[in-house]
Length: 375
Image (cartoon, rainbow, N blue to C red):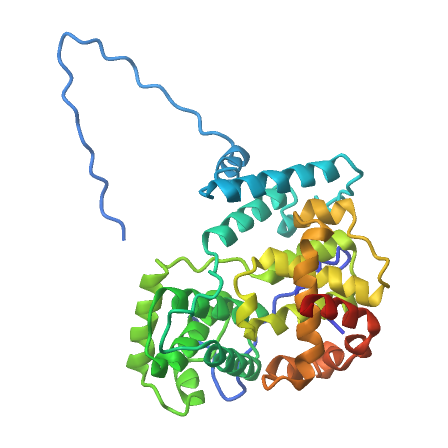
């Protein structure tokens, strides 16, 4: 069985296949003005030096300039400094080169991969979700958000869209709800429009707009969706590139040499967090690292250690991951009793190996993690 999103297999060629999102839907394939030149008049007595060509700095230095910049408050800067010192203590230990042997595969961009992930961490800090962002919202409550996300998981599954599309849609919903006070009757419209935008952003081919409207039982018109699309894109300034946990999980799984089973269980744990309002403020990179670490603890015994290579690539120590791991354990244990079953039903299918029904979520190990969270 193939799992989407696994670390690349060097022995296989990449195959890109087009597919329809729904069996009864057809696939649709989906100016710059002349520059104004300002001429400055130079006095005759002044010698005009010949224009000099300024060399552009190498891209890696540009990346470092924004990666090291910080707008954090003093206390946050102190925390970041302590965190860097902890990472530096691990950097003196043996770190495996996980990209060795990938130089001849251009799609893996080994020359730039570290800078790319530094940039993703910059973006997740730039587009962060505030904790408890609905506390002052009189219209929309956390449970209403959970109902919406659970429904979006079902819609996403029915349309057979990419996993990236689901994560991006949920991120769009949270970013809009934390910045705009919307009427509760607009909540479903925000959700389906966010999925529509995410599908256009991520998919090669995607359902037509009428399919999204139809699945809402024609509650909204085409005009309603397009108007909400304009509101969302303007509010987000067309910046949709907030990283998702999957981006970081793929890198971490490669660093850990994770099996298909471990990678899938980690994906399940990550996806369970989508409906939980108290998890939305955690950075995607933190959720990805915590999900993978907890999975190793469950499948490879409690003695598993988050080694220096994983610390280097995830940028988190095991101590930093522990609070989120405990929350994930609690969520996984109570998933069976939750009223929001979309993710659990999705991962009970044969496509995902029936992971959500695994006995590991009833083991003593995961119960110990969950008890720490409740205490």
